[in-house]
Length: 258
Image 1 (cartoon, one colour):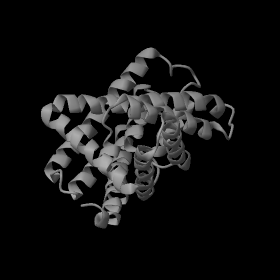
Image 2 (cartoon, rainbow, N blue to C red):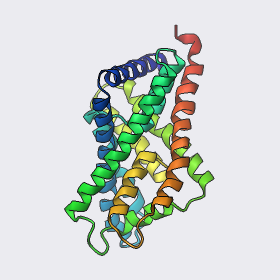
Image 3 (cartoon, rainbow, N blue to C red):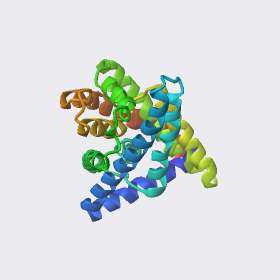
Image 4 (cartoon, rainbow, N blue to C red):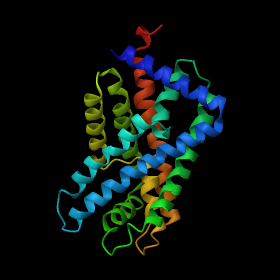
């Protein structure tokens, strides 16, 4: 079972490598697109959750976790290259020696920078809509964003490892399923698990921080706070996808793959 799924991961990694070699601009734009899809998920999650947050309801976070699943559906079916998933795909391909590590590094850099640009551009679009100008419309998002910049660095690091482990599984497991219904269900379930658990996803954080920052609210995040979060979270995501997913599946199936 795993061997067949891992073969699909190889094909996906090689397909993206071919896109990268053919046109780095196209690859970069796909990364921009992916984080904007994440941005849609962030908006719908915090806008929906805010209705309950205002009432101090305990269901605010679960509701946000459920609705954030829209992001993974957009990426899975709408395309785009997300750095967090790429840590799994490209590391596995490099361990299998079908991709060179220097190419992997370049592709990670392009996807990460593209994800940052996409998050910033999406935040600008949201700012121009005026959707978060109300007195209470931004309270939930601002609270979560600010808290993320204040957690201990060690906590951020380990939460990021667990996060990308789950997120990569959310893309990996559906490869062996038939029909869009079961695929969408398992993707949304695992994304719900990471969100409700309070784990840290670097690209989702980028979008949350960017939206908070453009609000120019007294409780908005600062650049220093954003950097303090993103460095350990990015490293943790890399270990979660590259170590707990790519290396683990490579080692566990080494004897079964030619």
